[in-house]
Amino acid sequence: MGNPINNEKGTSVFAAGLRATFGPKRVWHELTTLNWRDYTILAAMFVIEIGIWAFVGKDFSVWGFITLVNALATYLNLILVNRGRITNYLWGVINTAAWIILSFHSMYVGDALSQAYYMIMQFVGIYLWQKNLSTRGDSEEVTPLKITWRMVAIAAVLFVVVYMATVGISQFFHGQQIHIDGLLLPLGIVGMLLMTYGYRSQWAIWTIIDAINVYLWILKVHVDGGYAVSMLTLQIVMLLNCFYGTYLWFKKTAD
View 1 (cartoon, rainbow, N blue to C red):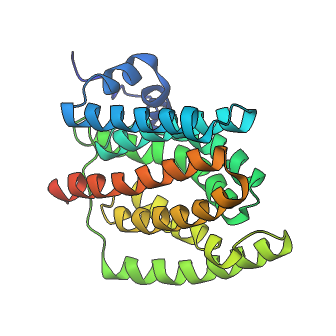
View 2: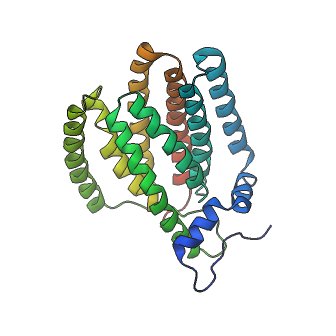
């Protein structure tokens, strides 16, 4: 099969990115050209999540089904991000929409705000990843970049400002675990910007975010059980995937 990336003259980068991300042919191509390690990890993720949902959480309510859809879409998103494939954003849109609903239901305001930001950045990412791919000729995977110390300093300032604002908003809406939950949006902003622009340092941020989410959903399991068990499983698997994603992105030669 030839390279599915089109660079037709007169076609905007964003329009080309949308076609690549949501086009059934491209989606199928990128799902069927992974390697055996990716398929093994994806299968393990699916089996664990479905098993926990069906036999441990046993939450067959609307919330339970939304949690399952969220988890399965997230796993597809993660595997494709690991490989630098642009169709990760299709699954990102699905899992982000589901996650926003679940976060508000659980009164994790900071998490909900983070997911709203992620939804916007899915489309920014489509544009920038397509632009990256268009300059790579036959490459179907985004090339990782190295972060500079100047960017680290800017990210630190951004983190402090957004964290203070998020905690204030969470207090206003009577959110839960506001000081810990409040970390998710500023970290998510930094992590998503790094991912969107193709910086491999994103994985350090995702690892911290996933560790925080594991803690938050452990607390939620004791209160809600059911769907929260599936969400906790998702967070643990996402944390483990961070180590795999870090390995793959740092293994590549960075610009």
